Amino acid sequence: MAAPLPNEGRLLDDVALRQYRDEGYVVLGSLLTADEILALRAEEERFRLPVGFGTEKNQNLRVNIQLCHRSEPIRRFCTAGPQLPLLAQLAGPDLCLTHQQFVTKLPDGPGENSDIPWHQDNGYGRLEPMTDVTVWVPLVDTDASNGCLQVVPGSHRQGLLDHGSAGINPVLREAHRVGDALEVPLAAGEGIAFSGLTLHASGPNGSGQVRPAFYVRYCNPATTLVGEDGSQRPVLEDPHSWMVRGEA
Ligand SMILES: O=C(O)CCC(=O)C(=O)O
Image (cartoon, rainbow, N blue to C red; front, side, top):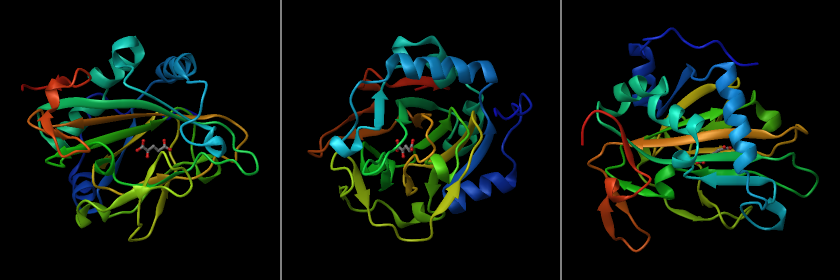
């Protein structure tokens, strides 16, 4: 069931802002109408890659990235969605979109897994400074049965952790989890915002139904992209990085 959209113009209150600061995540409420969820689900199916992200065992994890320039519903959400005024409260008035992707878990059978191990987003594409914020929105209702998002509240305060190749899926990276995991069940279209240093993960999809989700990461336009080799370049030099609010 899609949750009703929050009132137009609603902003995060002090409790929510404190939660983001202290725990590194905050649930934003509903960000998509029922029609927008359907439109994004159709786009997820249209762009779904025929192969999994990982080894033979991980064929149920489908990830397709940077589709904003190819899709009106994706572009509308990323550049004009109701999350933007809320993110401005969390990350400042000038916001640049830097990465978006569908993350889909097909139903896992025995011996298959679409798990995403514990990681920080800066353990993948590293940004400097690490003040980025990600919004994650499931396109169906999610709970532990289909691999809802999990976070470690407060983990952002540990700074950037070491990441290695994940045992369960060598294409993915994994950090040692320090702290207690919290499952965050969300209704279709509800969003969670978490910092680029917040440990998060998701388990297998044992539901028998596809679990599509949309992920979008924003940062300040003065941010630098740090390559694997330590090279640095301004985020706005990347063709997928667009201003969505304020000025660069
Ligand atoms: O969609 C999911 O299950 C989690 C996605 C995620 O953790 C990521 O893309 O960083």
